[in-house]
Length: 113
Length: 114
Image (cartoon, rainbow over all chains, first blue to last red; front, side, top):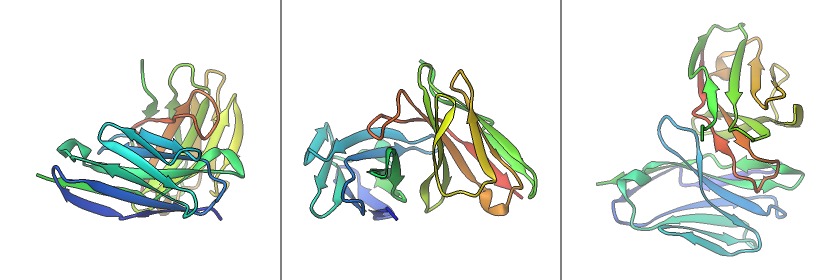
């Protein structure tokens, strides 16, 4: 079946450095890839997304890149700040069910002061 | 604008009991999805409701069920609880159906089965 693999499971970076989280998907027809951030005690919140007709998208310190040939996409956070500490989830749309997403297992990002 | 509201926030139940969780979506949102979140497993899709009809269902046993009311509020029920059902249950609402539509999540209901 379809799956999304997310790495690493935990990422610790120094404040001010960059963080990169990678996801690989199995369904070559997936066309929508969102990233969600979950802070402690809260539900996940969409931070950025990308569609298959675009290779890169940026929003201030956050960017997402998509490589359709290799079937992987990545989240890049530059100039990390303490408030970036959270769990990040990637997801990919499932073509057999146009309205559903399959999720990665999550990455706990720790920003060290 | 009020967000997605889930009640209760915390619940402790005994094996074999049943439980009902409630979700009130953002006003005007017609799609409600439910997820089970456990450590290291990410979000596992349970089901999606739209216009009071279940549109999609994940790979969970029949003990897990749900429904949606005419005001888009949704409930999920778990019968004959097992220890493995302990998890955070998240509800997400969307304005419309579609994987490209942003999902807004509630804070979740933390269910502990003892």
